[in-house]
Figure (spheres, rainbow, N blue to C red):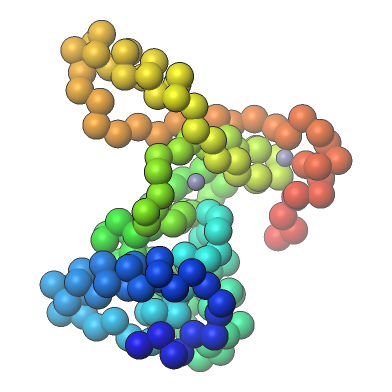
Length: 163
Ligand SMILES: [Zn+2]
Ligand SMILES: [Zn+2]
């Protein structure tokens, strides 16, 4: 089932994600094709917050025949079965990150170079809980995005994405 991919990867994660994805697809009368497996594999190992365009270029370097719309639609499906989480970090594109077997985290976003840093802060989590409670509110989920600038201009310039 995985022979179409040549990437060295953590196959345990990939196999588990494939199982979740396949169950979801079956429910919707869709099939886990080798293209979808390839897209999933590249997505799980992109290790970052990719948009459809970036993922398309990654997959295409291994699967020259893949179309952009296949990648785009597959990302939407991955989001629906909660393998991918969708983000809008205000840079005019929808980004996706691997949400499979991963704990909660929040993000720092550089408004100049687009660098995205993940962090976990138990104190912030605790305070959010307290704020919700004091407002008579049950906290179900939250997203915390902190926007700013890299402090080191050299780092920021180096990270700047060339469009
Ligand atoms: Zn993230
Ligand atoms: Zn920066």
